[in-house]
Image 1 (cartoon, protein in one colour):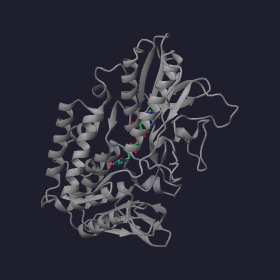
Image 2 (cartoon, helix red, strand yellow):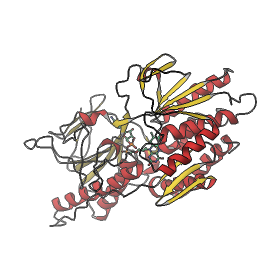
Image 3 (tube, protein in one colour):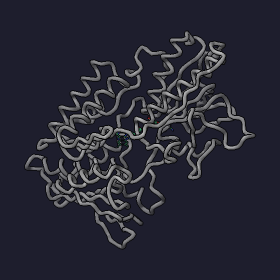
Image 4 (cartoon, helix red, strand yellow):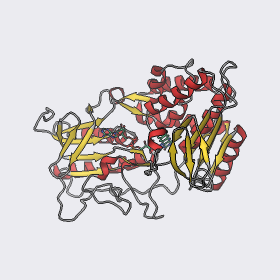
Length: 435
Ligand SMILES: Cc1cc2nc3c(=O)[nH]c(=O)nc-3n(C[C@H](O)[C@H](O)[C@H](O)COP(=O)(O)OP(=O)(O)OC[C@H]3O[C@@H](n4cnc5c(N)ncnc54)[C@H](O)[C@@H]3O)c2cc1C
């Protein structure tokens, strides 16, 4: 069944309302208005959820005591309804899961059998956990990719806390930024709980295959974060690879066996699996490759793709022409790529509408270095902005300011953004009693 719509209009469809999809929707909506094209083009944003997830707070959601905040409180801090984000904008929001894409005939298929034709398409479907085919890993671990994942982690740990279990063993597979943030927060959270629940005896271990945590990060950051983790009692098992997982134990390549009560896997992500099925140009590791102008090209030159297709964010792979390395899968890159993709898409539309004879295409030039903030337990974070490294309470304050900046500039109306931010601050500060 085709989704009903005014047939005279052409469809610009954005798939995925994550960091990149939201930025693209704002940008395209603004320009359709500016060029008075709203009567000729329908802007549609489709996502399996009717909300946008702010992933940087997920580690906090996974470690907030149940007696401090219920699911609805947490949902209102980490997720934002698309209807609220786009209030007053001419954007059609569809809560639908994409099941298949026909890029030759120009159709999007949703689960349930509905079909939506597109003329312009933006692929912003993000990423999913990569389990690298490690036997038993997916079955016996919890991921941290979505709001519901974060709740599941919290519920499982809290259940163990409430049942009075002693020496709870929490193991985190993967010492990248997500694993590090989560490990630090779990350890300090469990130790800070009120006396009746306090679980300072809980062990939190990170298993990392590289010789240090945060592989690829600046050495000073690695040293600072490692020192902080050790200080708060997180154990680092470095140069260790998980070979297989059985109930309550991870068997490492070295032969070591690590027992766990809770195993969380943050050791890898890969583009949304749907991307791999598309007849688009891919790089040597099979990821859809997008170059400067963020346009997707067909897998072979004799294949004709329907309309114009752009890709961005975690869903694609973009090699930095300067370093030859893929751009990291982070929110800032997704947002910048979205702005370039949207600009170029609108240049195509202007050309088609006779509003320009010479489109002014942009190229995405990745930043030399992306700024980042890594919270490591309580009111402590390490932030790197250009050459400046800030750590401790000040780093945590910088992280808070970056968050409110994102909400204000990219997501919510100012008053609502402040309300959400203050609510989160109030809950998380109460949760981090000892700082
Ligand atoms: C726990 C965690 C913490 C992070 N912290 C940071 C941080 O502090 N700073 C930072 O820069 N980056 C951080 N990241 C990375 C950042 O979240 C991603 O790089 C960013 O979300 C990528 O944006 P995107 O738009 O490409 O994809 P996403 O934001 O993942 O959005 C993809 C969207 O597509 C939707 N979708 C997927 N499949 C389908 C389908 N089949 N049908 C319909 N909809 C679908 C999803 O629901 C989602 O809304 C973190 C990630 C995680 C998991």
